[in-house]
Image (cartoon, rainbow, N blue to C red; front, top):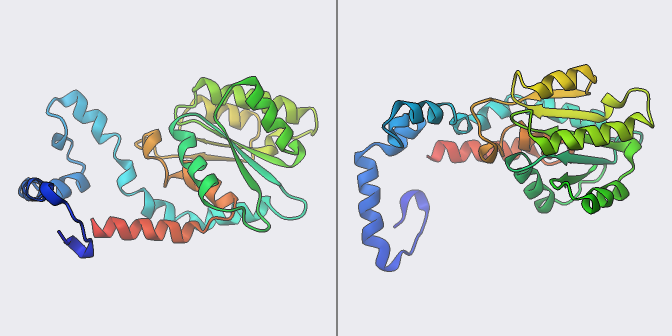
Length: 239
């Protein structure tokens, strides 16, 4: 099989897969995905409503490309000789998966902070993270789609109290990523967070890599998010 320049050797499965692809073309599967046709997956109305409200990831690359300059500008403002030396992403599940991949994939860029991803409430892990950073020069990203996930809220309270003991304006050391209208928006506003990034509510945590949940930490450590998003848009067009 060689669709669009992709060479695949399928062996004994070639015929079965060819039949499945032919059926998908007859059923207009690709077109129905892009039109967010929930009936492709489920027939009952309740499930279809959930599905329609979970497909924002399909076009998020283009939408994030439009705000890439803002993220890069923000990254430039928080770094430098007197800026933050570490960025600690505090989240669980889908909110921390992409940042962890970014941390492991991209080397630390010269002049940019180092990224740490905290996704455990184990006291020993927390102590280890505290020993790795200069709290006076660490930017904490509190990431939670719902804004009510227990672990990120615990991280937020712990680190906020630590920073509060050291500076008069502790909120300047914090950034929030969450959905619009969540409790986290209220708390971040009350505590004067440096920035609050409102993510599209129709993107689930495990589909949020190219949304603010992935692109904010990526930009802050110097990843070329323009190129990354451009490549993602190229994949969109090829589909």
